[in-house]
Image (cartoon, rainbow, N blue to C red):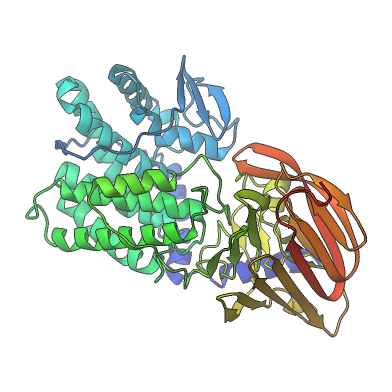
Length: 542
């Protein structure tokens, strides 16, 4: 039985992949095995002269190098041991080390940065991920920014060494773009090759970069401006890179490459569209909603992105949330983000959660209902929980996920959503995540001026345990719990149609590796549940 379930899960994961993903998964694995079999190693010996690029100032990077060979990424500090692929703090931590953002952080001495670059180059034979396409892509952009800023102060011998290694790495990237993954990784490959094309005046890099960037921006940026993986954090990461490329192409002559003017125009248009979506989704306190794989402290803040875009002369209007499926409701007392979205790009749901019809709620500028967030990408119980349906503010049937998320970044069967009513005060959604149990889930949000109501309906021929989850912000105080209502210091929750309710303790993450203990209201019902949230303001009776 377990084998059959595993085979089914794999089948329902693989069937959504594009044919090119499957082909390149096989091709890259066979190529890697053949290189190991014959002892073939990349030789970083081909030199090409790099060119100075007069960028407009970039946003400042966070301080991740703390001095004395100590780095802090993802809220975890670690002293460098000489191993660039140190796995002791997880894969994401060592990847962040290999991106080398820190060479651009304010206050870092140029000679210190140069020492780290040279150490990296010398350690490549001992670094298992030195030639991985994604780290090459991010690190390459950081090095080009650094070299352009400091080129006149770097001794010729060192500059030749770095340009030789960098050019050779880009030749590797050009042959191994992440067509087996696609999504944001493949787009980042294209952005980085665009930087390499301009830095090295290389037409081969330009041709590949132009194709990737043009085709992937068209595919990955939705009509309302959202990045199609539907993570506000990754939206901000990709947006910064799009603005970076606008910056890059404003620095060079239009005659350098064929089609440069058209690509620059397309990038600026996409940047404006993405900025408009960001303005539409950002909350009153200036933060992004932590939906899907999202955490604070990783991407540039919306304010920093706006400032960067304005520096380049980009203009945009406040957007209207459409195809992305997210909705943003604001009243005089509360602010709500409604998730009526699909899970994301069907062929890559690595950053998706099983969160169909979840929502977030702020009351008088303070968080009331929150997402449990993303604290880790490491495969295991915590990652499984944070992607699960019960970790979100929605309905769970029979303690199972509405979409079959598994592993660290995979998804098999997935819920399909239909928006049945789209505002302005009433929003209704249906999803079929529990169709295998013979049940359809309907949720209706009724957004009144002085109350926020949710009508849940889970109907089918079979009967299962059905629960609605409401995750409270860690700083919310629960004043009392009664048979049909929960009173907090920010609002009152009232329930109709349930047969029991209770509070449980849960972990909530706003950043990677930072967990706070909070409370979750769990409401058990059979067919229908009506939830009213009102009483915004002071604790009743005080």
